[in-house]
Image (cartoon, rainbow, N blue to C red):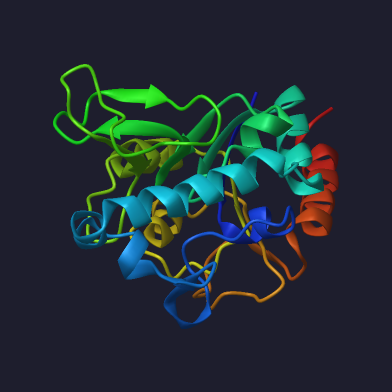
Length: 231
């Protein structure tokens, strides 16, 4: 099977009613991202940060995958699919995708503030002050905040280098370091970019631009892939 690597962003989750980090004016669901998505915001008011993510978690629990998520899961029948997502929700997993790398963390996991290797699944939607790890330290959302390292970037770059086919869907390609992954794709590899507001991408070989929303655009890409790369 050919290795299909997919980079997804907030545009794919938006069709399921979810918004993620980058919204107009530096706001995320009406909050200044620096109050709820930075280490400084956490140290200033951890209760506010925990409540913010509790509400995001509650919202995400009710969200359902859309056709773009389902297409990506369905492509596993014909390709070795790895999804590299900038999104913190679990909609790819809900749709049935089995190999998902979360660059910016996972909404339904918590992490120890004393030992970042201690990561736990969150049962339900609440994480509160007083919830502690096995070492007795407060748990925080397992989210990569602004100003923090992106620990999965090296893994994502290695996978991207091995891609036979590369798809970018629902991302503006302005959030680094994730946006730089496209530069790791070999020149002879077919590259598909799906977005209704086509990001400014420098011209490069084997680049196909599909200026549509994620759900309809991915159906078109699926048709092209099945026609060109399967028997």
